[in-house]
Image 1 (cartoon, rainbow, N blue to C red):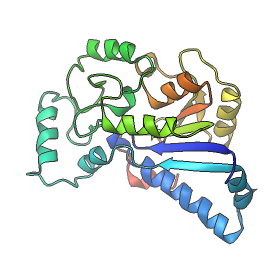
Image 2 (image 1 turned 120 degrees about the vertical axis):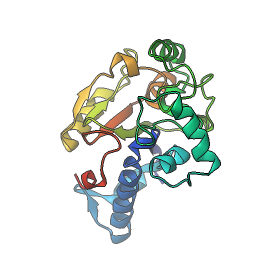
Image 3 (image 1 turned 60 degrees about the horizontal axis):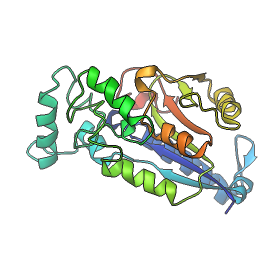
Image 4 (image 1 turned 45 degrees about the vertical axis):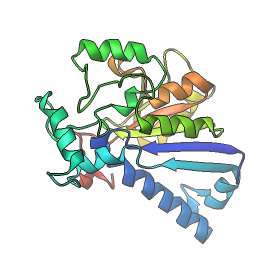
Length: 241
């Protein structure tokens, strides 16, 4: 019921699906503490939720996640369409290397924040058509999933956003030299709680993401949290850690 609004999202990328149960477990933990009148990390859950509204989009890329997890029959329309796309990019394992939505657009390269620069970089790398990963789409917000998050954000007054990805145990916090008020301070608090490092985004991935657009549009704290370590998709055995 609070005035502050926090937005958490997960699974922009299909083979980073472990972030979906991660944020759902967070919601379960918080709500259980609220119902029982107990605490989360020493803070009263009821007190927190009197001050803050939390919005969660736990599965931004449902079709892509289903593809990676083998939920589509081999003769289904979705599987056949994705397989045709994958054949043009044989160096990407199928379906385990699939990051995009089912149409072959990388959702976290589809937001209006340096999209043209992201396109230049990814086209130079050879991602020039619908692909398992790194295709920026035909225009900003060309994918229905990124458009949905964009519209959801415009319809609310989020004070902070966290986008969960994998992997690397790192927190990215700024965009294009824009340092939102308290952005680094909050990032350092998140790092202290998690043991993750706070870093700048690598240049090849520094544009057209949700976090980038949120910071650019609002000058408010926005974060990409790269959970876990290893090769995507991370095994469920990493979940507790």
